[in-house]
Image (cartoon, rainbow, N blue to C red; front, side, top):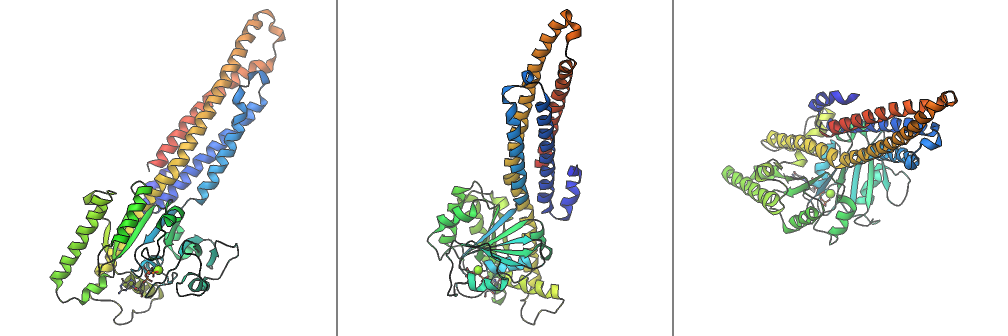
Length: 417
Ligand code: GTP
Ligand code: MG
């Protein structure tokens, strides 16, 4: 069906790769569902003596396929942001959303986990874990802020449903997760279990004014012991501060120092990427400047004097480059982790269906042989329907075989797009 245009769509945005694969896999499962129904109808019309024992399981296959289709529609790409307090995690998410949605500020701000996901409606709203009631976006500050009196538990989750039309990432099924600073909680294992096991990409928001801290490193050691080779990006944030330094050569040296230590961390210590690839995972940015300039660009208003530092463009490019690399990485990873399981299950179901039909065919062939024996003796008494059964089962068997092959071809195409 729509498998052919994957390449074209990918040149628009790497994120489309996920949507395309999702659609393809969904189409494949709809086809399988049709084949299952067809086989089911066929089997129920068959005389009892031609049915094999596990003919009943075909009904179960139908339910399994419906279950997969349901999960599939909820599948998304998830990115989580970690780092020490005040490094700029919330500001980074806001810059990507091109909107001030996450509360941000000096001191310890974000007190619990906040997830932003797309919704179809034109107004955003909030959901908390304790109720189904939609809350106003303006409650976020009170609910999520460390300064607030009505505090939620640290590992609790607030979901922000934000209109898809307002952000390209949300439109393409990316879900953002903001976290409290990793230096303010002792319960990191709990966090990982609850919020990280289904993440496709981790963004470590570091502070370029200092250096990677042990708490940050420990956290990612824990993550990589639970997930095999997590995808990690490091944002050296607050790089605008370096503009104030007198000696440009020294700034270059600091940059080199960050590069070295971050590459060492990703490649030698965590071993999640090789040294060459590690360099492509590190970006020197200013989330604050990027957010300010994007807000003014969208509002078509000039940025206030002094809000963007010298050489701002360089940091803005770095931010955009990060987003580009992130898009490629997250869509590939999500297709692999989310859809591979589905397609594996799809393959199992189609091959089980095939063996049911094979057995049915064998059984009716045996019946057919019996019929042949009888045929020579009492030709006229042969039940016309029974003769037809043999012809039909052979046809059905060929059809099922072709179907299984087609499904396997489509699944592997969708997986390798
Ligand atoms: P917590 O929620 O407390 O863990 O902090 P956070 O990591 O979410 O940081 P947040 O985004 O709230 O930013 C903290 C402060 O740093 C805010 O006042 C931001 O405006 C400021 N800030 C964020 N990014 C930058 C940046 O790139 N440069 C500068 N100069 N300030 C920044
Ligand atoms: Mg925050």
